[in-house]
Image 1 (cartoon, rainbow, N blue to C red):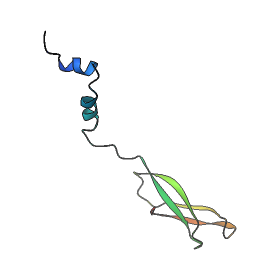
Image 2: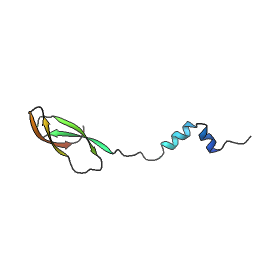
Image 3: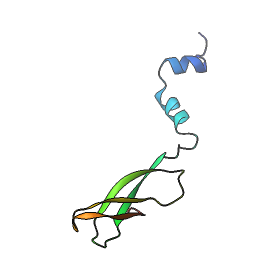
Length: 80
């Protein structure tokens, strides 16, 4: 009887070998990041939003702040 070839081992389901192939290489970078939009009114109210990771400029939105009952400017801050 001959020794099984490498392809034969893969067909038999050599799980450890397949798993080692998948973990070799660098992991993919995430396409989006979560950011915090903090109210400029100083109320401490914030929104959480997704931002593309390639985008370098800071986001600013005019959104509703329920603590002051009006629309105010929200600026990007890092997630804690």
